[in-house]
Image 1 (cartoon, rainbow, N blue to C red):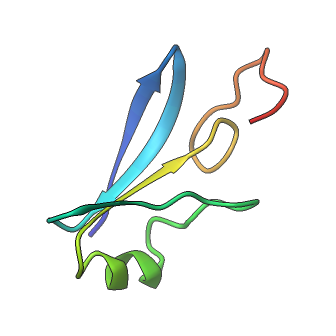
Image 2: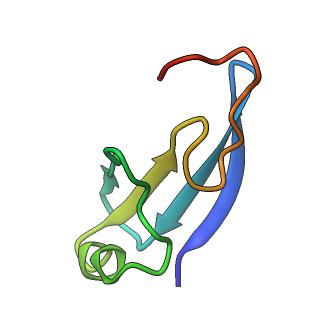
Length: 70
């Protein structure tokens, strides 16, 4: 089961989903975020630790008021 936490980077709060163990794999989303319950995360986590952050204004990451672009 994925672990979803909030992480603050340079004052911007981000949701980060983590699942699995072993060699870390960074999974970046495109126009849509990756659902924490997506089967893709389960399959990839068999081969290492998945780290999937949601950019500002995506997923459960709030969009800062003064933030215009990613």
